[in-house]
Image 1 (cartoon, one colour):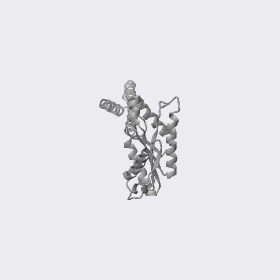
Image 2: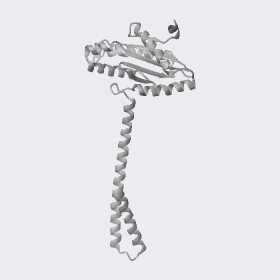
Image 3: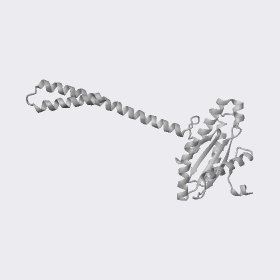
Image 4: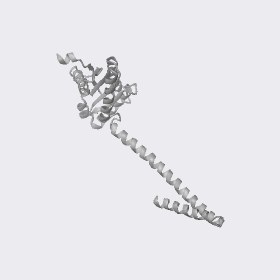
Length: 241
């Protein structure tokens, strides 16, 4: 690059000298000078194209790295880290605007036994199928589905009533049941079920985000204690009793 700049400087210097003694300069000198300048122009255009390609590649690489940082490698839905970022943003928005926010904690029932019975590759296929079913269930762009860890998933429903969260829980349970009846599904004729815990509130500034997740998790344990393949809604009165 430096050599190109130096070559351009030399051409400019020669042009200035030639013009300073005009009209004494011959046409041949002008032709040579013109040819050198054309060569420099072609080289400059090539460098510009290369720079554009490098910029596009860098942009694509940056986007890919950004995707890797927020997407779970196995299920290709959001990962726990990115979920927490989105959750914090939506929580703060709900506090500021006094809007209701709902969250569902979901666990695949008896997943260890599933892995032991069918193998870890089948277990991976199960996780991917379940994640895809969850992703299909959400209808709004602001809703977020993420893998929380292992066989546990979470669905965030900003600005959603408790009734909406309940309908979502019912839909998720039914979608997994449908997968087990679908011949094209890896879950065909395999008894796969999920348990869901639902929490919903209009948060105030004094409320804690992690405590809200704990409430959904508590409801999830209640669903498991009730026999699994069902959902439960967090209720403070149940905890107090």
